[in-house]
Image (cartoon, rainbow, N blue to C red; front, side, top):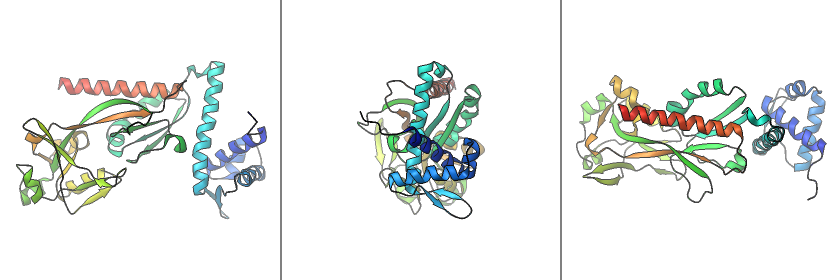
Length: 311
């Protein structure tokens, strides 16, 4: 196939990524051993090739344009793949290294994964973690992610999915709310309560509450005056301040239940859960940094399952 890039163009891409990372031509030049003018010329060469502005320039600093950010994410990922290929060819990939981009839902990130990351980096200090907390589904190709953790696995995605945990659902409210409005004792009574809604970003609709009654699984629509989008932890904040009832994962509100800030209701209709799964593209040669991260997380979840079984 014909050559797509010259050595000069590949060098320009590397300098562009440095400038994007440091938001400064001067800093990029210092790290590359060049002058700021040389870095600026290389970025200009890229902009002329692409026909778009990659940076928004002011007298004091630079920042990526929207097109520039998309280009940066893909170039950064592609350059890392080249580094991985060289390490594998030379036998250096025995030591996991490089940037690992991971997307995860906010509750799983705050309450489970982020507390584990210092131990992971202590074991693999040459890995750099780029962590995104978001409830949006990510595009692995255009956004350069290596792995995502999601509740809902897209059908026919061509991705590998591995279940981590089944997260139990509970309905909770603040003592002040229950004192004022009473605790519901049946699913039908939920219609008389403020049920705080979470809007699922991927579909733009309220998440349906889930229960079991007489051994039958039920999806139960609820209503309320409050809706939260993007960050499900916002529903917890509202509930703690007496705004109403929420259905959420037990691990999210475990501390509040133990302290008495929140109280569980409708326990007899519990028992439903949602699975959190790893999602990643199929790799002919999986990078070592991704392999060890997956192994680390699977082992942590297995330990958690054993602890929950024994208690």
